[in-house]
Image (tube, rainbow, N blue to C red):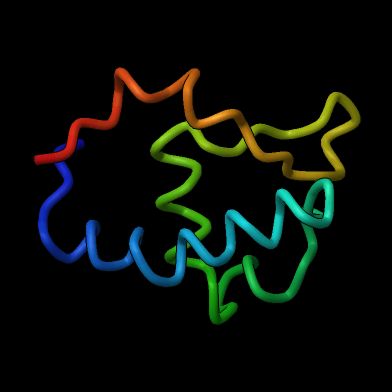
Length: 78
């Protein structure tokens, strides 16, 4: 999926902040109210997933941050 200015703005604001929170907490529960349907961070969460910056734990109960260096080749910026 091509990403344009709206996705970049979302990434630089809400998504980056959410990513940092997930890193600091060591993960985020799959049922966290911010990321479920209708949650205030649902779009940011979806973008992080599309970019490959989040992965589910083996038991499926937690979203964990992926090292950005491992997905850097997929994310191209000007």
